[in-house]
Length: 161
Image (cartoon, rainbow, N blue to C red; front, top):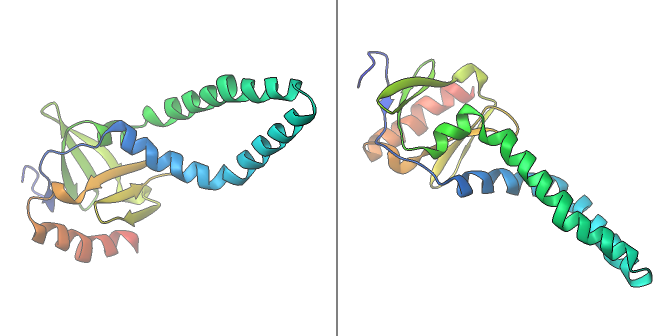
């Protein structure tokens, strides 16, 4: 362990950017799915009566939807949690927060006081600092299974409480 306060240090790991943003998109779709489906169904139904609504539907699909996706990606891709989730790094977990070792430099990524919630998956820990911003911590990144279990059973309940 590099830091005297460090509780855990992980092996180098990364997540693909597509997988990272799939989680965020899935959450947004669940939140906005009914409105989107209703709008598309109304436009498709209106197209049956007047072809001009079909043009509006195509404009929505090919102009507005890509613009929304671009803004969405741009908004969340520039966050430190997103950047350090998708690059290869090692993580140092200490009582104050999480530091990443990236390009042979240690950078502070998040403080535990900024964490809103932690979701536990069978492959990873999703440490949310906002509604749609999270830090991805892979279970496979821990040096041993005992470290991972110790982090999950002893350290996480202190952070969550």
